[in-house]
Amino acid sequence: MPSTQDWINGPLAVVEEMFAASQNNPNSGWEAKAVEFFQDQLKDRDTHTLVPSLNDVPLHYLKPNSLVKFRCLIQDMFDPEFYMGVYETVDPSTKTKMLRCGKYKDVTECGVDFNSRNTVTAERQTFYCVPIPGENPWVKEISSSCLTEAQARVVPSTSYAPSRQKRSYEEDDDMDTQPQKQREPHAGMKIPSEHHGNGDCKRQETEAPSSQTASASHLDLNFPLPGEKGPSCLVKVYEDWDSFKLNDTLEVYGILSVSPALSALADEKDASSSLLDPTESMETAEEQRVHSPPASLVPRLHMLYAKPLPHNNPLLPSATLEDNSAFLSSTLSEMASVREELLSYFTHVLLGDALAAEYLILHLISNVYSRRDVLPLGKFTLNLSGCPTVASYTERFYQIIQQLVPSSHYLAMSLQNMNQMRLVPKKDYVANRLVSGALQLARNTSLFLDETQLEQGQLDTTGVHTAGRVYFCIATLVNRHDFLRTEFPGGTVQHFSSLSPQSDCQIHLQPQVAPSQLDESLSSIHMHLQASSQLNKFRIYLSMARLLDYSISDEVTKSVEDDFVDMRKDDPQSVSAEDLHRMLVVARLLSLSLGQTSLSRDSWLRAKHIEMLRRSRMEQHKCVNGNEP
Image (cartoon, rainbow, N blue to C red; front, side, top):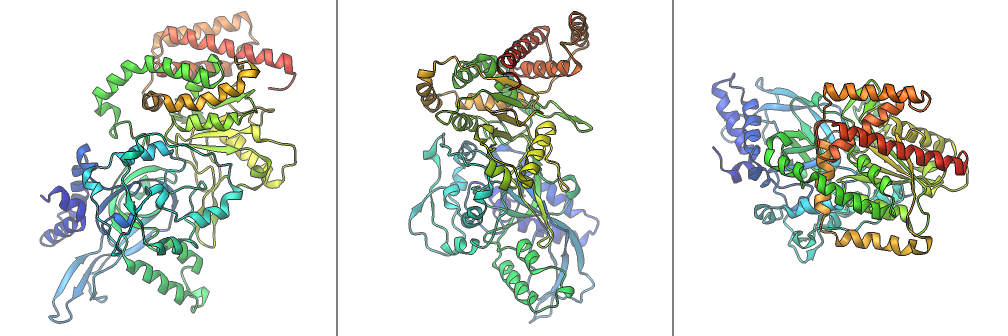
C-alpha cells in the first residue's frame, strides 16, 4: 500500500498502477477500487487534514497532479464532455505500443495512436464551482489556522523566485478584482467586517506571478457576491453526477490539474474559431472562453471523492454527530448555560429588549428540515421593526451576526439596489453559462435584508420584479427561476412599513436605553463583542442546535391538541390554525435551543407564553401607530 505522502503527492501513480494491474483481468473493477482506496484513506480525520486545501493554500503553492480538497458551491453545470478513457501510444523509436489510462487527466501522453481499436471513449460531467458565497472571515481564519506542518511546508510549484513576504490568501488573491468592480454598482451595500481569531497563526506566503492578475483582468469568475475572494474550479465528475444538484455545497477531494497545455489549447481554439464558419463550429468563441479559461486562474479538479457539507463551521467535527458521541454529549450538557449567555448578549445588542433577543436566537437556529409540496417545514424568518436609524445600528447589528454564523449576506434594500441589482441567476445563451446573482446562496446562509435603507422614490420594472422575488424568497426560502431552487433561511431587519409581509414572525423592538445614552450603548456593542471570550461557544451552539434531531411524543401531541381546543373555546377568533403552526415551530426551536431533542410540556407552555407576549406587543403597536406594522 502506498504511503500517505505517496497517494497525496502522486495520486495518479496509484490510479495507473491499478489500471496496469487490470490489464490481465478485464473484470477486475479497477475504477471502483481506485475510488474506494482514496475514500478509505480519507476516513481518518488525522489523514484528511494532511490534504492541502484550495481554500487556504494559494494555487501557485500546490503541486500539479497532487491530491487537494476544495470547500465549494456548485454554481453551474456545463454539458457533459467526452474524453479518451483508455488510449494507446506508440514509441516513435521502438514502435512499442502501450495502453494508457486517460481518466483523471486533461492531457494525453505523446504519441497517441488515434486509429487504435483499443481506444475507449468515456464521458464525464463538468461543474463550475466557487467558494461558498458569503462565508465569513472567521470561518476562513480558523480553517487556515488548522493547516498542519505538512501543508505549511508546501513548496511553490512555479519556477519563479519568491522575493518578499506577502499577505494571506484572501488578500493575496485579486483575480476577480476587475470583474467585481464592474458589478459593484449592481450589488448590495458592502459591510466592512473585522477579522476575529488567531491571525498570527496564518501562514505567510510569497508573491504569485503578477501575470496571473493581469490575465484575470478580462475574466469574470462569476462569483454570486461582489468582493468574494478565492479560486473557482472546473470540477470533473466521473461517477454518479446525477446525485449532485446545482447549488449543493461540497467538500471535493480530487487531483489538481493546472497544465499549461490547457491554456495553449484554449488559445488555439480561440484563434481557429475566428477563421471558421460559425455554423460549422460546435461552440461560440464566447462559450469557448468561458468553458476553457486559463488553468492558472481556474484550475481543473478531477473528483475522486466528494461529501455533502451539512455545515461549514470548522469548530464542529466534520463527521456526523452520531459518529462523535463524546462531542455531542459534552455540547448538549452545556447548551442551556451557553444559551443564557447568548440571550444576555443579544439583549444588550438589542438595547435591552429580552423578548426580541429570545426570538433572534430562535431565528438563527432555524432550518428547513423538510418540504411538503412548496411549504417549507421549519422555516422561521424574522421581521424586526422599530430599529434605531442613528449610528448605523443595522450595519453594526449585521457585523455582530456575521461574527456568529458561518455564512451570511447583507442586502441593503435601497431604491438604487432594487432597481439595478441582479438577484437571481440568469442564463447566458451566448456563452452557455449561468450568470450568478446575489441570491445564489448556499443552504443555511443567513440573509440580512436592511429596509432602513429605503427612501422616497419610484421602483422601475426591474425594481418591481426584484421586490416580487424578495417576497417569494421570504415566503418559501426558494430562489425561483428556470434553472435552480435555492434553499436558505432568511431574516429581515427593517424600520419602515413592512416590505416583507411574508415573514413568519414580526416583532417590534422596544429599546430599554434612554435616547440620550443610545450612541454610547451602540458604541459599546462592538467593543463588547471583541472582548468576549465566548465567541467560539456561541458559534458552536448556533450550528449544533441546527443539526439536532427533534421529535414529539404521542402524549405531548395529545396535550397540545387539548390546549388548542381550549384556546379556541375561549375565543375562536384569537387563535387560528396558522397561530398553532407558529407556536409549534417556536416550541420546536425553543426545545432545540435548550439542547432538548423532544418537546416537553414546559417548553410548550414557554412557547405559548412568549408568543402571547409578542402578539400583545404587536397589538399595542398597531393601536398606537394605526396601520403601521
